[in-house]
Each structure stands twice: as C-alpha cells, then as structure tokens.
Length: 319
Image (tube, rainbow, N blue to C red):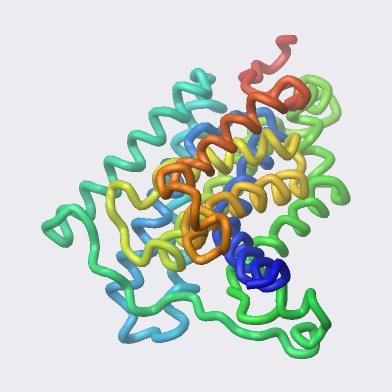
C-alpha cells in the first residue's frame, strides 16, 4: 500500500469519526462565547444517541432511508431539553457551572440507560438497520488526488459537520447576534448597559449547544456504533470540550482540533489495515485518542484564553 493509498484510506475515516466531535465542539463554542461553561456535553451526547437509536428502531420500517435524518431532529430536541436544565441552574439560579455540568452528565446517562432498560428489558438496544449512506460528489470526485481523498465515498454527516462549522464562524463573527454573543461572554455588564439581554443570550447559546450536542451524539450512534448502551458514548463529549479549548474557542479552530482527534480515533479503529501502524499494539491505538486529548490540553491550555466572563454568573448591576 503506497503512501497515497494510505491517505485515501485514512483521511475519509478521520473526517467520518470527527463529525460528532465537530458538531459537539461547536456547541461548546457557543456556550463559552456567551459566558457559560458547558461540561455537560457528554450527557447531552448520550441523550441524543439514545433517543435517535430508539427512534430509528421504532420507525425504520415506516420512514426508510429518511430515518437517520429524522433521528437527528429527535436527538436535537432532546438535547435542547436537557440543556435547559443547565441553563436554569447556571444562568437563572447562578449555580456553579462546572458542578451543574457534571450533574448533567450523570443525569443524561442515568435517564438514557434507565429508559433503554425499561423499553428493551436489557442493557442495550438492538442494532439499527437504517444508517447514513455514503455517496460520491459529481465533478469534484474526478479531481486528481484530492477528489478521491475528500469527495468519493463520503458520508453526508461529514459534509454536514463542516458546513455547520463554517456557518458557526459566520454567525459568531459576521452577524449582530454573534457580536452580542461575544459581548455577553467578554463583558456582560457592558452588554447589558447597551440593551443586550444577557440572560436571553445565554439561554439561546446553551440551547444551541444542546441541539448540536444532541445531533453529535445521534451521528455517533447511528453511523459509528449502530446501537446504544451505557458505553456507546464514552468520553466523546470530553474530547469535544478538549477540541473547543485546543481550537481556542473559535469554530474553525475547533473544527481543526476535532479533525485531529478524529484522525486519532480512525487510527485506533482502522490502524490494523495500515502498513507499519498495524505493528503497533492494539492497546496503544485504543488509548491514543485519549492520550492525545491530554497532551493537547497540557500543551495548549496555558496559551489559550477563554472569554473573560466564562463561568461567571451575571448579577445585574454588579461588577
């Protein structure tokens, strides 16, 4: 297998595995830019994964190929509902945002596993039959070298994740909404003085993160796992948070960092088919994504600066 063939094999896989991380990390960018720390992305992904798989199993016969896509909408709704718990606790009640996020993770897992146990009378669901399909992009797939690398046999979820990242960049940096969002996260009192509703902006940002986190969990469950159990989402939410920090709270930075982690995940799964990499012990490949997450945070967290008001509850009239 030549080096080019290795790239043809590993790059589409990396983007495929990165898609859930990209969407969830972008959700984290929105909350942090508004001044709210969302540690609960893991729990939101879990609820999104569980709800989408259960919907997929229940309606696959009626909806056919559209089932996974409708499953994304279902996951988005449940992600928003769960994120509202964080919004009430962190924004309205001014509770500690880190503790609230950890509680959200525990609650999301408990609700998902309990519901699966009640519905299926076992610890995990059956495997779904309707998954996201792959396709070739006309014209672009014929471009020498990069055509086969990026536009042949691609998943629609990979394209969706990249589109959302670019759209998020446009919204945050090129629209009045994005300006208000960043103002609330940097200096909420100044934003409030200028007539921006700080509470409303933070609620909207947390709900956006819930929507994107739910979709991220649904994509992971319906395209990678194929079913749902207690260990289906096992650290992906925290990887998304790491990608957000590694990307310096910027949508495109988070996209690049998520692709980096997706590459590590792809190596852990398909590495046995790649020359030289196949000689690396399986255990090393399995822990590689988590080790890279730790190294990335250890190397960059001191160099990256979060929005100034991130994690700080806003009390009107108080500095």
